[in-house]
Each structure stands twice: as C-alpha cells, then as structure tokens.
Amino acid sequence: MHKLKIALLSYRSAPFSGGQGIFVKELSNALLKRGHEIDIISGPPMPILDPGIKLIKLEGLNLFETFSFRDRVSKLWNKKDKDFLDYYDFFKTLIGGFPEMYSFGERVKKYLLQKKDYDIVIDNQSLSSGMLEIQKNYPFVEIIHHPITKDFKYDLIYSNGYIQRFFKKRWYSFLKMNKKVAPKLKKIITPSLNSKKDIELDLKIEPNRIDVIPNGLDLTVFKKNNVLERERFKIVTVASADIPLKGLDTTLKAISLILDKYPNTKLSVVGNPRENGHTERLIRQLNLTNHVSFKTNLSKEEVAYEYQSSSLAVISSLYEGFGFPAAEAMACGTPIISSNSSALPEIVQDFGQLYEPGNSDALKDCIENFYLNRSAFNDLAKKGSLYANETFNWEKIALDYEEQFLETIEKFNSC
Image (cartoon, rainbow, N blue to C red; front, side, top):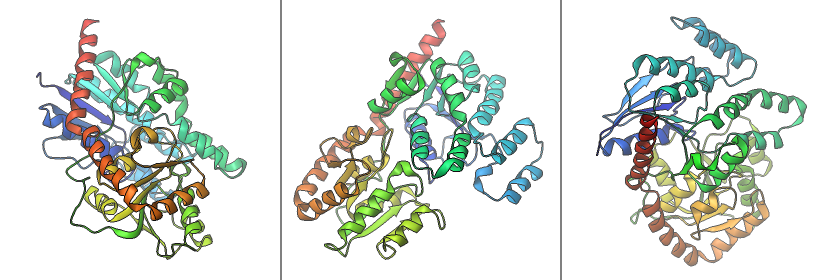
C-alpha cells in the first residue's frame, strides 16, 4: 500500500471537550497504524497526540480561553509579530462574532501554499474560504460532522428575547461563509446518513459529492468491564451544559419526575455547567442538587469508567450528526435510552429504547421501564456491545478513509 503524507487540518482541537480534538487524535492514530505519515495542523486549543504524529501549531490569540475583556486585550497586546488576522480575530470577537474558522483558513492556506509537501489535505469542518484555494493545489477532502445550521436553529429557538437572538445571529455569522464554500467542495465525508441528508439540504451540496463513513471509537478503552460492579441507580449522560442542542433540560426534568418512586436515582453528567448559568439554576429549581453531579475534563479512560459504573446511559440530544456518547455507551455494554432524533437511531439501532426528543414525561416512562425490566435492557446492551465493536472499529474505518483518499488523489492527478 502506497504510504501517504497527510495534512489533517483542525481549526481548534480541545483534547477534552467538544469532540474535535478527540476525533482528530483518533483518526490520525488509525491512519498512522496504516503506515501513513500524519501532520496535524491546528489552531488553539491544541490536541494531545500519540507519538509519531507531528503537530504544527498555527498560533492565534485563543480568545475563547477567557471571557474577560482585560485578558483578551492582554492576549493581543502581548503577542509578538501581530498581523492583520490577529486584529481581525480580536475585533470580530469584541463585537460578538466567532472568527476562528476564517482566520485559521487564511493561516493554513498561507502555510500550505508555501510548503506544497503533502499527498492530500483533510480539513475537519472549518468550511473556510481558504479551503477553496487549498483545493486548487492539493487533493482535498472536507469532513463535515453535521451542518452547524442545526446548532443555530436550536440556539435561536431557545433564545430569550430580541437581544439574545441578535447576538446569536452575530455569533453564527460564519455560516454565510460556510454556505458559500460548501457547494464548491469536491469531496466531503460525513459520519451518518442523516448528516448527509442535512448537508445536502442546508448547504446545497450534490449527493454524489458526499460519502458516509462512521466515526470510530478507541475500543481498547470503551469496552465492557466485567470486574467493575455497576451502581444500581446511577444514570450517566454526556452533555455540554447550557447548550440547548444536547437536551440536558429534558433529562433533568425526567429525573425530577421519577424521584418519588425511585429516590436513590443519581445522575452523573459528563460535562461542565456554566457557573450560575441556566443548568445550575434549573437544578436548584427542581431540587436536584443532591442527585446530580458533574464530571469535567475527563480522560477517555475516566469517561469509559462513567459508562461502565452506570446502570443506564441516557442520550437526550435534540440533534446529533453522529452521537459519540451513544456509541461509547453501547461499546461499554451499558443499557441505553436515547432520543429518536437525527442520527441517533442510526447509531442505537435496536439495541436501546428510543423516545421523542424534548419530552421529559416520555423519558421518565422509559427510565421507569428500565427499572422494571433491567434484564431485558441488559440483554439488548450485550448485543449492542457486539455491534459497536464491529461497526465503530477504527481499523476497519481507516480502510474506508484510505479508499476515499486514494480515489480523491487519482481524480486530482487526472485533471
């Protein structure tokens, strides 16, 4: 097999949150095992990578590390060799925008057009205008996990008042660039059929340009633990608190409804609540302070432990392009209840119980059904674990990516 030199681009790659850093690490590691040479070119925050993978840092100001105006001014002031993009980042952020996709695209375009040292370039969902110039000079693949138009939709629905909606629209102003760039991309990979459908509709892309390859899991970590005893009334969920798309409100309300019958129920949330934000206020309002705990900045081993020590996993997302928590819970052999939204039925298949997204009464009924029928749920979970190990295997998935890369290179060279 021909060894490829691959540039994998990631405009931000936080190693413990948001999924991008985790995806970049896992994909690059799988391709490295196939014998390819991988350079990760990333903006801040930077990923944590395995040995053998080179990290090329395109340093920006990392303004979203803090929300303090003074700290942001200090970042700009103290950066050496400031350029136009640094000032653009600062002032765009100052007025409520999110400039990272555009700025990263311009920085990486400059870097790649000077270097010209890769067989193929893969971009992890920046959808920035710089990608179009890169596509002219390299075989190029864009990975779109799901169209961010969905995040925008739900953020608007759950916004309170005109002012909040105004600032949401300003934040998501990068969507204009995404929608302009996406239809001009020649090759796109997405992790689910549902995402493919939504990308076609929202970003106006021809279906024949989009291929579906599921995301993989580190199955040496996300696996059944036959030694660890599950806590009988522990429920785990994964949610970026205060982000409506993840549906944490639904889970919290369902837990409050079931406590009369099952007062020992405890919810472990893998995620970080905003201090005195919406989620913390809702927990106090529902009198759940003693029943809900948050686990933040966990390693993947610690995340796996949360699944392995829980009797039930709840996935309450209103929208998922793939649904890592569902796949991870299944791989760990944890019984699962999931909303039937977007890509989640594709992931869960027949190995868990589905409910209508946003319906806390329906979720409460599902949890009660689990308590009354643990044996049936556990049987499904065993089958689900086998399915997850076969389907979300990076060794198999890397072969599918490799096939798409070689096809893209061949088409580029024939033009």
